Length: 490
Ligand code: FHN
Image (cartoon, rainbow, N blue to C red; front, side):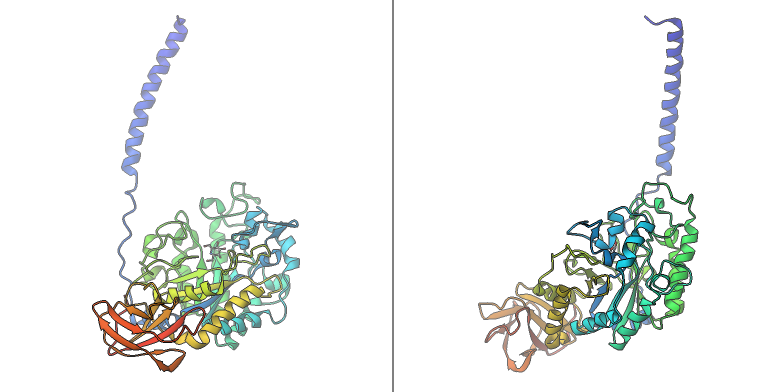
Protein backbone atom coordinates (compact mmCIF):
# COMPACT_ATOMS: atom_id res chain seq x y z
CA UNK A 1 0.00 0.00 0.00
CA UNK A 2 1.46 3.46 -0.82
CA UNK A 3 1.73 6.39 1.58
CA UNK A 4 -0.21 9.59 0.50
CA UNK A 5 3.14 11.16 -0.24
CA UNK A 6 4.06 8.22 -2.36
CA UNK A 7 0.61 8.22 -4.06
CA UNK A 8 0.81 11.97 -4.61
CA UNK A 9 4.33 11.57 -5.87
CA UNK A 10 3.23 8.77 -8.18
CA UNK A 11 0.34 10.91 -9.51
CA UNK A 12 2.76 13.70 -10.24
CA UNK A 13 5.18 11.26 -11.86
CA UNK A 14 2.37 9.76 -13.95
CA UNK A 15 1.24 13.21 -15.08
CA UNK A 16 4.80 14.14 -15.89
CA UNK A 17 5.27 10.92 -17.88
CA UNK A 18 2.09 11.57 -19.82
CA UNK A 19 3.20 15.14 -20.49
CA UNK A 20 6.68 14.00 -21.54
CA UNK A 21 5.33 11.30 -23.84
CA UNK A 22 3.04 13.88 -25.50
CA UNK A 23 6.00 16.19 -25.93
CA UNK A 24 8.07 13.30 -27.27
CA UNK A 25 5.42 12.37 -29.84
CA UNK A 26 5.15 15.99 -30.94
CA UNK A 27 8.91 16.38 -31.10
CA UNK A 28 9.29 13.19 -33.12
CA UNK A 29 6.61 14.24 -35.57
CA UNK A 30 8.23 17.63 -36.10
CA UNK A 31 11.66 16.03 -36.37
CA UNK A 32 10.37 13.66 -39.01
CA UNK A 33 8.75 16.53 -40.76
CA UNK A 34 12.07 18.35 -40.65
CA UNK A 35 13.93 15.15 -41.66
CA UNK A 36 15.52 15.95 -44.94
CA UNK A 37 14.08 13.83 -47.69
CA UNK A 38 16.11 10.73 -48.35
CA UNK A 39 18.93 11.76 -50.62
CA UNK A 40 17.56 11.84 -54.10
CA UNK A 41 18.92 9.21 -56.41
CA UNK A 42 22.08 10.65 -57.83
CA UNK A 43 21.18 13.37 -60.23
CA UNK A 44 21.73 11.86 -63.66
CA UNK A 45 24.54 14.04 -64.80
CA UNK A 46 25.46 14.20 -68.41
CA UNK A 47 29.19 14.96 -68.44
CA UNK A 48 29.53 18.47 -69.75
CA UNK A 49 32.05 17.67 -72.41
CA UNK A 50 33.02 21.12 -73.59
CA UNK A 51 35.65 21.48 -76.33
CA UNK A 52 38.01 22.94 -73.71
CA UNK A 53 37.63 19.90 -71.49
CA UNK A 54 37.99 17.47 -74.40
CA UNK A 55 41.23 19.16 -75.38
CA UNK A 56 42.54 19.09 -71.81
CA UNK A 57 41.73 15.37 -71.39
CA UNK A 58 43.22 14.25 -74.72
CA UNK A 59 46.79 13.44 -73.60
CA UNK A 60 45.49 11.76 -70.44
CA UNK A 61 43.10 9.49 -72.35
CA UNK A 62 45.82 8.57 -74.80
CA UNK A 63 48.33 7.89 -71.99
CA UNK A 64 46.32 5.07 -70.36
CA UNK A 65 49.17 4.23 -67.92
CA UNK A 66 50.86 6.15 -65.08
CA UNK A 67 53.04 5.46 -62.09
CA UNK A 68 51.86 6.37 -58.58
CA UNK A 69 54.54 7.00 -55.93
CA UNK A 70 53.88 7.10 -52.20
CA UNK A 71 56.94 8.43 -50.40
CA UNK A 72 56.88 10.27 -47.05
CA UNK A 73 58.06 9.99 -43.45
CA UNK A 74 56.13 6.70 -43.22
CA UNK A 75 58.53 5.19 -45.80
CA UNK A 76 61.49 5.19 -43.43
CA UNK A 77 59.42 3.48 -40.72
CA UNK A 78 58.80 0.64 -43.23
CA UNK A 79 55.77 -0.74 -41.45
CA UNK A 80 57.70 -1.07 -38.18
CA UNK A 81 57.10 0.66 -34.84
CA UNK A 82 59.22 0.18 -31.71
CA UNK A 83 60.99 -2.69 -33.41
CA UNK A 84 57.84 -4.65 -34.25
CA UNK A 85 55.91 -5.08 -37.50
CA UNK A 86 52.70 -3.06 -37.39
CA UNK A 87 51.16 -5.51 -39.82
CA UNK A 88 51.83 -7.51 -42.97
CA UNK A 89 48.94 -6.16 -45.00
CA UNK A 90 47.30 -2.84 -45.68
CA UNK A 91 48.47 0.73 -46.04
CA UNK A 92 51.61 1.39 -44.01
CA UNK A 93 51.45 5.02 -45.09
CA UNK A 94 48.83 5.05 -42.32
CA UNK A 95 51.36 3.85 -39.71
CA UNK A 96 50.97 7.01 -37.62
CA UNK A 97 47.26 6.30 -37.42
CA UNK A 98 47.71 2.57 -36.88
CA UNK A 99 49.93 3.14 -33.84
CA UNK A 100 47.89 6.20 -32.75
CA UNK A 101 51.05 8.33 -32.51
CA UNK A 102 50.83 12.10 -32.06
CA UNK A 103 52.60 14.13 -34.72
CA UNK A 104 55.67 14.98 -32.63
CA UNK A 105 56.34 11.39 -31.59
CA UNK A 106 55.79 10.21 -35.17
CA UNK A 107 58.15 12.84 -36.61
CA UNK A 108 60.81 12.17 -33.99
CA UNK A 109 60.91 8.46 -34.93
CA UNK A 110 60.52 8.89 -38.69
CA UNK A 111 62.65 11.88 -39.66
CA UNK A 112 66.01 10.23 -38.93
CA UNK A 113 65.00 7.41 -41.31
CA UNK A 114 63.95 9.70 -44.14
CA UNK A 115 67.06 10.60 -46.11
CA UNK A 116 66.49 10.31 -49.87
CA UNK A 117 69.68 9.66 -51.83
CA UNK A 118 70.90 12.32 -54.23
CA UNK A 119 69.53 10.57 -57.33
CA UNK A 120 66.39 8.99 -55.85
CA UNK A 121 64.10 10.94 -58.18
CA UNK A 122 65.98 9.94 -61.31
CA UNK A 123 65.51 6.27 -60.33
CA UNK A 124 61.74 6.77 -60.06
CA UNK A 125 61.45 8.66 -63.34
CA UNK A 126 63.62 6.22 -65.30
CA UNK A 127 61.63 3.26 -63.98
CA UNK A 128 58.34 4.92 -64.95
CA UNK A 129 59.69 5.54 -68.43
CA UNK A 130 61.00 1.97 -68.72
CA UNK A 131 57.57 0.63 -67.70
CA UNK A 132 55.84 2.60 -70.43
CA UNK A 133 54.18 5.08 -68.08
CA UNK A 134 53.31 8.44 -69.60
CA UNK A 135 52.81 10.25 -66.29
CA UNK A 136 54.00 10.05 -62.70
CA UNK A 137 51.82 11.09 -59.73
CA UNK A 138 53.60 11.46 -56.39
CA UNK A 139 52.64 12.43 -52.85
CA UNK A 140 53.46 16.08 -52.24
CA UNK A 141 51.85 15.64 -48.81
CA UNK A 142 50.15 12.54 -47.42
CA UNK A 143 47.82 12.37 -44.42
CA UNK A 144 50.74 12.75 -41.97
CA UNK A 145 50.99 16.35 -43.12
CA UNK A 146 54.69 16.31 -44.04
CA UNK A 147 55.23 18.48 -47.13
CA UNK A 148 57.80 17.32 -49.66
CA UNK A 149 58.27 20.83 -50.99
CA UNK A 150 60.04 23.82 -49.41
CA UNK A 151 57.01 25.51 -47.88
CA UNK A 152 56.91 29.08 -46.60
CA UNK A 153 53.85 28.32 -44.46
CA UNK A 154 55.12 25.30 -42.57
CA UNK A 155 58.24 23.98 -40.88
CA UNK A 156 56.96 20.41 -41.21
CA UNK A 157 58.42 20.19 -44.68
CA UNK A 158 61.44 18.94 -46.62
CA UNK A 159 62.87 22.45 -46.75
CA UNK A 160 63.00 22.84 -42.98
CA UNK A 161 63.73 19.23 -42.00
CA UNK A 162 65.94 17.97 -44.86
CA UNK A 163 67.16 21.25 -46.34
CA UNK A 164 65.91 20.02 -49.74
CA UNK A 165 63.01 20.68 -52.07
CA UNK A 166 62.05 17.10 -52.96
CA UNK A 167 59.12 18.22 -55.13
CA UNK A 168 61.52 20.17 -57.34
CA UNK A 169 63.89 17.20 -57.55
CA UNK A 170 61.07 14.85 -58.56
CA UNK A 171 59.51 17.28 -61.04
CA UNK A 172 62.88 17.93 -62.70
CA UNK A 173 63.59 14.18 -62.98
CA UNK A 174 60.16 13.51 -64.50
CA UNK A 175 60.52 16.26 -67.06
CA UNK A 176 63.99 14.99 -67.99
CA UNK A 177 62.31 11.68 -68.92
CA UNK A 178 59.47 13.38 -70.81
CA UNK A 179 56.88 12.34 -68.24
CA UNK A 180 53.79 14.35 -67.36
CA UNK A 181 53.72 15.32 -63.66
CA UNK A 182 50.94 14.76 -61.14
CA UNK A 183 50.73 16.08 -57.59
CA UNK A 184 48.89 13.84 -55.13
CA UNK A 185 47.84 16.12 -52.26
CA UNK A 186 46.13 14.92 -49.09
CA UNK A 187 43.44 17.25 -47.76
CA UNK A 188 43.41 15.11 -44.61
CA UNK A 189 46.17 16.35 -42.27
CA UNK A 190 47.33 14.63 -39.08
CA UNK A 191 49.92 17.32 -38.23
CA UNK A 192 48.18 20.68 -38.48
CA UNK A 193 46.95 21.94 -35.11
CA UNK A 194 43.81 23.57 -36.54
CA UNK A 195 42.55 20.52 -38.48
CA UNK A 196 39.27 19.70 -36.72
CA UNK A 197 39.31 15.92 -36.89
CA UNK A 198 36.13 15.56 -34.84
CA UNK A 199 34.12 17.05 -37.70
CA UNK A 200 34.08 13.66 -39.41
CA UNK A 201 33.30 10.23 -38.06
CA UNK A 202 34.59 8.65 -41.24
CA UNK A 203 37.96 10.31 -41.88
CA UNK A 204 40.84 8.80 -39.89
CA UNK A 205 42.98 10.73 -37.39
CA UNK A 206 45.48 9.27 -34.86
CA UNK A 207 43.95 11.37 -32.06
CA UNK A 208 40.29 10.70 -32.94
CA UNK A 209 38.23 10.51 -29.75
CA UNK A 210 40.80 12.43 -27.74
CA UNK A 211 40.36 16.13 -26.94
CA UNK A 212 42.28 18.51 -29.17
CA UNK A 213 45.76 18.64 -27.54
CA UNK A 214 46.11 22.39 -27.93
CA UNK A 215 42.54 23.44 -27.10
CA UNK A 216 39.72 24.30 -29.45
CA UNK A 217 40.57 24.34 -33.15
CA UNK A 218 39.47 26.54 -36.02
CA UNK A 219 39.17 24.44 -39.18
CA UNK A 220 38.99 27.61 -41.26
CA UNK A 221 42.61 28.26 -40.34
CA UNK A 222 43.52 24.77 -41.60
CA UNK A 223 41.66 25.49 -44.85
CA UNK A 224 43.72 28.69 -45.27
CA UNK A 225 46.88 26.64 -44.77
CA UNK A 226 45.71 23.96 -47.22
CA UNK A 227 44.99 26.60 -49.87
CA UNK A 228 48.32 28.36 -49.20
CA UNK A 229 50.36 25.17 -49.73
CA UNK A 230 48.42 24.23 -52.86
CA UNK A 231 49.10 27.75 -54.15
CA UNK A 232 52.85 27.23 -53.51
CA UNK A 233 52.76 23.88 -55.33
CA UNK A 234 50.89 25.22 -58.35
CA UNK A 235 53.02 28.39 -58.57
CA UNK A 236 56.61 27.34 -57.97
CA UNK A 237 57.16 24.16 -60.01
CA UNK A 238 56.17 24.96 -63.59
CA UNK A 239 53.39 23.12 -65.41
CA UNK A 240 51.45 20.69 -63.24
CA UNK A 241 49.53 18.21 -65.37
CA UNK A 242 47.42 16.45 -62.71
CA UNK A 243 46.15 17.39 -59.24
CA UNK A 244 45.28 14.15 -57.47
CA UNK A 245 43.26 15.11 -54.35
CA UNK A 246 42.84 12.60 -51.50
CA UNK A 247 40.23 12.16 -49.87
CA UNK A 248 36.80 13.12 -48.59
CA UNK A 249 34.01 11.39 -46.71
CA UNK A 250 30.25 11.44 -47.12
CA UNK A 251 30.05 13.23 -43.77
CA UNK A 252 32.82 15.74 -44.47
CA UNK A 253 33.66 16.89 -47.97
CA UNK A 254 33.58 19.64 -50.55
CA UNK A 255 32.85 23.20 -49.48
CA UNK A 256 32.39 22.45 -45.76
CA UNK A 257 35.63 20.52 -45.44
CA UNK A 258 38.02 22.13 -47.92
CA UNK A 259 36.38 25.19 -49.54
CA UNK A 260 36.66 22.87 -52.52
CA UNK A 261 35.42 25.02 -55.38
CA UNK A 262 37.71 27.89 -54.37
CA UNK A 263 40.59 25.43 -54.15
CA UNK A 264 39.85 24.08 -57.62
CA UNK A 265 39.58 27.62 -59.00
CA UNK A 266 42.90 28.51 -57.41
CA UNK A 267 44.53 25.55 -59.15
CA UNK A 268 42.86 26.15 -62.52
CA UNK A 269 43.90 29.81 -62.48
CA UNK A 270 47.52 28.81 -61.88
CA UNK A 271 47.43 25.72 -64.09
CA UNK A 272 44.72 26.10 -66.77
CA UNK A 273 45.57 22.75 -68.40
CA UNK A 274 45.48 20.80 -65.16
CA UNK A 275 43.38 17.64 -64.83
CA UNK A 276 41.88 16.99 -61.38
CA UNK A 277 40.30 13.92 -59.84
CA UNK A 278 36.99 13.75 -57.96
CA UNK A 279 38.21 13.29 -54.37
CA UNK A 280 37.47 16.72 -52.93
CA UNK A 281 33.91 15.40 -52.88
CA UNK A 282 32.08 12.20 -51.89
CA UNK A 283 28.64 12.61 -53.47
CA UNK A 284 26.85 10.74 -56.29
CA UNK A 285 27.24 13.68 -58.69
CA UNK A 286 31.01 13.29 -58.25
CA UNK A 287 30.97 9.59 -59.04
CA UNK A 288 30.70 8.25 -55.48
CA UNK A 289 27.95 5.98 -54.13
CA UNK A 290 29.43 5.20 -50.69
CA UNK A 291 32.55 5.12 -48.55
CA UNK A 292 33.33 1.64 -49.90
CA UNK A 293 36.32 1.17 -52.19
CA UNK A 294 33.87 -0.12 -54.79
CA UNK A 295 31.50 2.76 -54.16
CA UNK A 296 32.05 4.42 -57.51
CA UNK A 297 29.52 5.30 -60.21
CA UNK A 298 29.69 6.04 -63.94
CA UNK A 299 28.63 9.65 -63.50
CA UNK A 300 30.59 12.83 -63.00
CA UNK A 301 29.59 16.44 -63.28
CA UNK A 302 32.90 18.05 -64.33
CA UNK A 303 32.44 20.77 -61.76
CA UNK A 304 33.50 18.14 -59.21
CA UNK A 305 36.54 16.93 -61.09
CA UNK A 306 37.68 15.41 -64.37
CA UNK A 307 37.87 11.71 -63.58
CA UNK A 308 36.46 9.05 -61.27
CA UNK A 309 38.92 7.10 -59.13
CA UNK A 310 38.16 3.43 -58.40
CA UNK A 311 40.78 2.09 -56.02
CA UNK A 312 42.36 -1.39 -55.84
CA UNK A 313 39.81 -2.81 -58.29
CA UNK A 314 38.70 -2.59 -61.90
CA UNK A 315 34.96 -1.89 -62.34
CA UNK A 316 33.50 -5.02 -64.02
CA UNK A 317 32.19 -3.18 -67.04
CA UNK A 318 34.34 -0.07 -66.76
CA UNK A 319 32.62 3.27 -66.16
CA UNK A 320 31.16 4.09 -69.57
CA UNK A 321 30.61 7.77 -70.33
CA UNK A 322 33.09 9.15 -67.81
CA UNK A 323 36.86 9.40 -67.59
CA UNK A 324 38.17 7.03 -64.92
CA UNK A 325 41.43 5.71 -63.53
CA UNK A 326 42.01 2.68 -61.31
CA UNK A 327 44.81 3.19 -58.78
CA UNK A 328 46.40 0.03 -57.39
CA UNK A 329 49.28 -1.20 -55.24
CA UNK A 330 51.78 -3.83 -56.38
CA UNK A 331 51.49 -5.58 -52.99
CA UNK A 332 48.89 -4.38 -50.44
CA UNK A 333 50.43 -1.14 -49.15
CA UNK A 334 50.86 2.27 -50.78
CA UNK A 335 53.75 3.33 -48.54
CA UNK A 336 56.77 1.04 -48.13
CA UNK A 337 56.62 -1.86 -45.66
CA UNK A 338 59.38 -4.40 -45.28
CA UNK A 339 56.80 -6.88 -44.02
CA UNK A 340 54.44 -6.91 -47.02
CA UNK A 341 55.53 -9.58 -49.49
CA UNK A 342 52.12 -10.08 -51.13
CA UNK A 343 53.40 -8.99 -54.54
CA UNK A 344 51.10 -9.31 -57.52
CA UNK A 345 52.62 -11.59 -60.19
CA UNK A 346 53.83 -9.95 -63.40
CA UNK A 347 51.15 -11.57 -65.59
CA UNK A 348 48.45 -10.14 -63.31
CA UNK A 349 49.97 -6.65 -63.62
CA UNK A 350 50.07 -6.85 -67.43
CA UNK A 351 46.54 -8.32 -67.59
CA UNK A 352 45.23 -5.56 -65.31
CA UNK A 353 46.69 -2.87 -67.57
CA UNK A 354 45.08 -4.53 -70.60
CA UNK A 355 41.78 -5.12 -68.80
CA UNK A 356 41.55 -1.47 -67.76
CA UNK A 357 42.41 -0.20 -71.25
CA UNK A 358 39.83 -2.60 -72.73
CA UNK A 359 37.22 -0.90 -70.54
CA UNK A 360 38.33 2.63 -71.47
CA UNK A 361 40.16 3.52 -68.25
CA UNK A 362 43.61 4.54 -67.07
CA UNK A 363 45.85 2.50 -64.78
CA UNK A 364 47.81 4.26 -62.01
CA UNK A 365 50.14 1.61 -60.59
CA UNK A 366 51.85 2.40 -57.29
CA UNK A 367 55.38 1.99 -55.99
CA UNK A 368 56.35 2.66 -52.37
CA UNK A 369 60.07 3.54 -52.18
CA UNK A 370 62.04 3.06 -48.95
CA UNK A 371 63.17 5.85 -46.59
CA UNK A 372 66.15 6.71 -48.80
CA UNK A 373 64.00 6.70 -51.94
CA UNK A 374 65.17 3.32 -53.19
CA UNK A 375 62.55 1.36 -55.16
CA UNK A 376 61.98 -2.16 -53.77
CA UNK A 377 63.43 -4.79 -56.19
CA UNK A 378 60.02 -6.47 -56.50
CA UNK A 379 58.53 -3.21 -57.74
CA UNK A 380 61.36 -2.76 -60.21
CA UNK A 381 60.84 -6.28 -61.51
CA UNK A 382 57.10 -5.79 -61.93
CA UNK A 383 57.41 -2.44 -63.65
CA UNK A 384 60.15 -3.74 -65.96
CA UNK A 385 58.02 -6.76 -66.88
CA UNK A 386 55.23 -4.43 -67.95
CA UNK A 387 57.76 -2.32 -69.82
CA UNK A 388 59.08 -5.33 -71.71
CA UNK A 389 55.54 -6.25 -72.81
CA UNK A 390 54.86 -2.61 -73.73
CA UNK A 391 58.01 -2.44 -75.88
CA UNK A 392 56.28 -4.70 -78.41
CA UNK A 393 52.62 -3.99 -77.68
CA UNK A 394 52.16 -0.40 -76.46
CA UNK A 395 50.34 0.45 -79.72
CA UNK A 396 47.46 -1.71 -78.40
CA UNK A 397 47.22 0.42 -75.22
CA UNK A 398 48.17 4.05 -75.97
CA UNK A 399 45.44 6.07 -77.67
CA UNK A 400 42.95 3.21 -77.59
CA UNK A 401 39.36 3.21 -76.45
CA UNK A 402 37.20 0.49 -74.91
CA UNK A 403 36.32 -2.79 -76.57
CA UNK A 404 33.26 -2.79 -78.91
CA UNK A 405 31.95 -5.89 -77.12
CA UNK A 406 31.98 -7.66 -73.77
CA UNK A 407 35.26 -9.27 -72.76
CA UNK A 408 35.76 -12.60 -74.58
CA UNK A 409 36.88 -15.71 -72.69
CA UNK A 410 40.27 -15.75 -74.44
CA UNK A 411 41.39 -12.24 -73.39
CA UNK A 412 40.58 -8.57 -73.93
CA UNK A 413 40.03 -6.19 -76.88
CA UNK A 414 40.98 -2.54 -77.33
CA UNK A 415 39.87 -0.27 -80.14
CA UNK A 416 41.59 2.35 -82.29
CA UNK A 417 39.32 3.62 -85.10
CA UNK A 418 39.05 0.81 -87.67
CA UNK A 419 41.45 -1.47 -85.78
CA UNK A 420 40.84 -3.95 -82.96
CA UNK A 421 43.70 -5.24 -80.83
CA UNK A 422 43.04 -8.78 -79.66
CA UNK A 423 44.95 -9.48 -76.44
CA UNK A 424 45.05 -13.25 -76.21
CA UNK A 425 45.73 -14.32 -72.62
CA UNK A 426 44.94 -17.99 -73.30
CA UNK A 427 45.94 -19.25 -76.74
CA UNK A 428 42.84 -21.29 -77.75
CA UNK A 429 43.50 -25.00 -78.22
CA UNK A 430 40.76 -24.98 -80.86
CA UNK A 431 43.12 -22.96 -83.03
CA UNK A 432 40.60 -20.18 -83.51
CA UNK A 433 39.08 -17.26 -81.65
CA UNK A 434 35.91 -15.30 -82.30
CA UNK A 435 35.33 -11.56 -81.97
CA UNK A 436 31.57 -11.04 -81.42
CA UNK A 437 31.11 -7.97 -83.63
CA UNK A 438 29.23 -7.16 -86.82
CA UNK A 439 32.06 -5.97 -89.04
CA UNK A 440 34.13 -6.87 -92.07
CA UNK A 441 37.79 -7.73 -91.63
CA UNK A 442 40.44 -6.40 -93.97
CA UNK A 443 43.49 -8.11 -92.43
CA UNK A 444 44.63 -9.79 -89.22
CA UNK A 445 48.33 -9.85 -88.29
CA UNK A 446 50.55 -10.52 -85.30
CA UNK A 447 51.32 -7.14 -83.72
CA UNK A 448 54.82 -8.36 -82.95
CA UNK A 449 55.40 -9.38 -86.59
CA UNK A 450 53.21 -7.90 -89.35
CA UNK A 451 54.47 -10.60 -91.73
CA UNK A 452 52.50 -13.19 -89.74
CA UNK A 453 48.96 -13.09 -91.09
CA UNK A 454 45.82 -14.95 -89.98
CA UNK A 455 42.75 -15.87 -91.99
CA UNK A 456 39.48 -14.31 -90.81
CA UNK A 457 35.99 -15.59 -91.59
CA UNK A 458 32.68 -14.03 -90.62
CA UNK A 459 29.49 -15.64 -89.38
CA UNK A 460 26.49 -14.80 -87.22
CA UNK A 461 28.82 -15.23 -84.23
CA UNK A 462 31.07 -12.47 -85.51
CA UNK A 463 34.63 -12.56 -86.92
CA UNK A 464 36.61 -15.79 -86.42
CA UNK A 465 40.39 -15.70 -86.60
CA UNK A 466 42.15 -18.91 -87.65
CA UNK A 467 45.27 -19.12 -85.49
CA UNK A 468 48.52 -20.69 -86.57
CA UNK A 469 51.64 -21.30 -84.53
CA UNK A 470 51.91 -20.56 -80.80
CA UNK A 471 51.49 -17.59 -78.47
CA UNK A 472 54.56 -15.35 -78.81
CA UNK A 473 54.26 -13.63 -75.43
CA UNK A 474 53.99 -15.29 -72.01
CA UNK A 475 51.54 -12.70 -70.70
CA UNK A 476 49.43 -11.65 -73.73
CA UNK A 477 49.94 -12.15 -77.47
CA UNK A 478 48.35 -9.32 -79.47
CA UNK A 479 46.71 -9.67 -82.88
CA UNK A 480 45.97 -6.57 -84.95
CA UNK A 481 42.59 -6.93 -86.66
CA UNK A 482 42.04 -4.23 -89.26
CA UNK A 483 38.41 -3.71 -90.30
CA UNK A 484 37.04 -2.12 -93.43
CA UNK A 485 35.64 0.79 -91.36
CA UNK A 486 35.86 2.29 -87.86
CA UNK A 487 33.95 0.58 -85.06
CA UNK A 488 32.36 2.15 -81.96
CA UNK A 489 33.58 1.29 -78.45
CA UNK A 490 30.93 -0.20 -76.17
O1 FHN B 1 44.15 6.90 -47.35
C1 FHN B 1 44.70 6.97 -48.65
C2 FHN B 1 45.71 5.88 -48.86
O2 FHN B 1 46.73 5.99 -47.93
C3 FHN B 1 46.27 6.00 -50.28
O3 FHN B 1 46.93 7.25 -50.45
C4 FHN B 1 45.12 5.88 -51.27
C5 FHN B 1 45.63 6.02 -52.70
O4 FHN B 1 44.54 6.22 -53.55
N1 FHN B 1 44.13 6.92 -51.03
C6 FHN B 1 43.58 6.93 -49.69
C7 FHN B 1 42.64 5.76 -49.50
O5 FHN B 1 41.61 5.83 -50.48
